[in-house]
Structures are given as C-alpha cells and as structure tokens.
Length: 194
Image 1 (cartoon, rainbow, N blue to C red):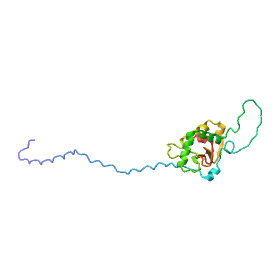
Image 2 (image 1 turned 180 degrees about the horizontal axis):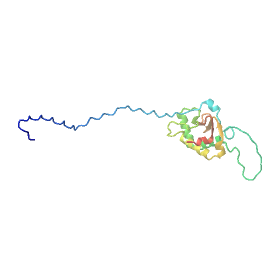
Image 3 (image 1 turned 45 degrees about the horizontal axis):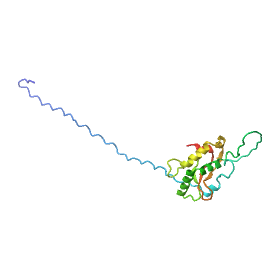
Image 4 (image 1 turned 135 degrees about the vertical axis):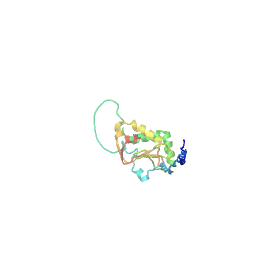
C-alpha cells in the first residue's frame, strides 16, 4: 500500500488472535459407585414338624387322599371291572417314588443332609421348594416322578381337591425318608404347574 507524503504512518493493526487448535478438555463422567445386586436366595431344606406330619394325609387314609365324600350306585354290565379305589393318588405317588431307586436315594441323601431324623422334606407348598444343591425348584427326580404319575392319572383324579399336607413315605419304618406336599386346599393337577 502506497502512502502519500506527509501522511501519518498507519497504526499497526493488531494481529488477529491465533486460532486455538486445542479443544476444551472433556468433563470426566461422574463416578457412580455400582449398587451390588442382592444376593441370590439361599436354598434351605424345609422340614415338616412331627405335629404337621401327624395331621397329614398318608397312603393308608382312604381313596384319593383328598376331601371325603360318599355316594352309592348299582348296575349291571359286561366287561372287566375296575379294581376300585382308582383315584388313590397318595398310594399311586408313594408307590411310584418307592419303585424309583434314584428318587429314593436322592430323598435319603437330602434327608441326611437336612438332618431330618424322621421328619419329612417339604418339597411342594403350592410351588416347588428350592432345595440346596439343585439347580431348579424341588428335588428334580422327585418332581419328575410325581409329575409323570399325576400327568397320566385319570383326569377326574387330577381334579380331586386335597386339603393340607400329604405325606409320602419312601420306605417302611419311623426313620424312613419322607416327602410332604401341599398347603391349604389344592388339587393334584396343581403339581403339574412349573
């Protein structure tokens, strides 16, 4: 730029501020302490008391092991007759569990681990009870054997109402391993629910 003579020298222009190549430092995220997950519920053996066992339904308590009733009928016909007592679910289940050596061994082992001393393991109380050492609910072998027997019982038997506990003994004698099922009023078909 050419300047006329006698003209004052232009004031030097300040240099434009240099562009900063640096970016502002990021704000570090707020440190939040993680909340620990609640501990998984610990499975524990649930034992039935001697007084509860005394009031429980057993295989010798009559047909069905449920609520009692009466009735009469007569008639004639041809064909094989039923053996009567068709819906003795307590007898059915007890016999099925006694026949299965793996089930008997599992209940005996669980009874020993629980220090049951003649008391029954409560394996179903409207839901299958968690048992130590088992990945699912209920003693797996017991649950499966009961489910199979109930599933293949006549529908009328599965619908039979039951009140209170049912006691299944896996051998004879006072120290025999036992399992208990039930609470309140329920039906055999309830045992099939997952």
